[in-house]
Each structure stands twice: as structure tokens, then as C-alpha cells.
Length: 187
Image (cartoon, rainbow, N blue to C red):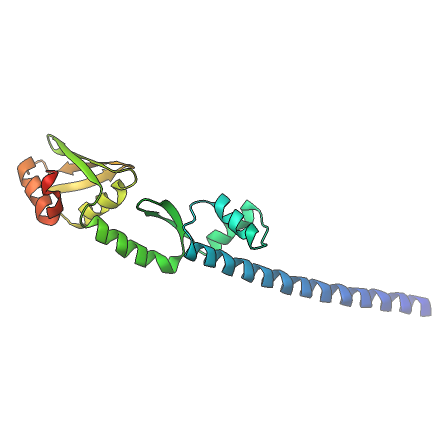
């Protein structure tokens, strides 16, 4: 009976030691994750990172070695998005930086920088832009709420504008110029 009590006592000690080890492991893992997340935020906010491969490389330079799957989960946890920056392409942005970048982008798009040409075919206008500009310019045109425009569809460098069938191309041109005077040389 005494051997059985010693045996149970040893089991309880082992369970206690194991539970302490598990708790310490959780504390260390949480600390490492918090450090990793802060480092991801720092890198994204200081550099123009366009893909996970580059971000993984930057993390490796900091001594943080993780898999692409872990990085994907971390980016989702941080609610990191991608945003198009002129001459840089799509880069990762933190949620708190998104509003500022959108405001800067809208200021550029309000002038419709990047429009190369506008051609008409009946009640459709086709706008050609620099690569990557179409989406933001299309949004600016939609936000202008031009009554002669029914709506826009944007690709990477082309926008289709559907003009109200009761509006003439000339009336639409004038409305577009009223909202975006910088287009006078293009129209």
C-alpha cells in the first residue's frame, strides 16, 4: 500500500510539473506571437511590401522564422489589406493607415491623373488609363454622381462608362468636364 501511495504521489508530481511546463510554454508562445505581430506591423508600416515572400524575407532578417501559412494567419488576424499605390503597385497596409492612404488616393483621383484617352460609342464611353489606375478613377467618377452616367465598370487600365440613353455624348462630356476640369485636353 505504501508503494502504491508513493507511486500516486510521483504521478501527481509529474502531472504538476507537466502543467507548469504547459503553462510556461503557452506564456512563451504568446510572447513570441506578440513580438512577431509587432514586427509585422513595424515592417508593413515602414516599407512598401507587396507580397508575402518579401515579408517573410524581412521577418527572417529580424530572426523570425515562420511559414507562409502562419504569416497568412497573422495578416488576417491583424486585418492587413492591400492598397494600390501609384508607381509602386499593391502593397500591404494596416487598417489604421488605410484611411490616410485612401484620402491621398482620392485627392489624386479627383484630378483623374492617369487618364490617357476617352472614346465614345453610342451610350458607352471607354476610358483608357495607365495600368492600375482604372479602379480608382472609376470610383471617382461614380462618386461624382454625374446624372448622365448610369455606372462604371473598371478593369486594370480600362473603364466602361454607361451613359444614360436620354443624355447625349456632348452633355456627358460637359458634365465630366464640370466635375474634372483637368480632362479638357483629353476630351
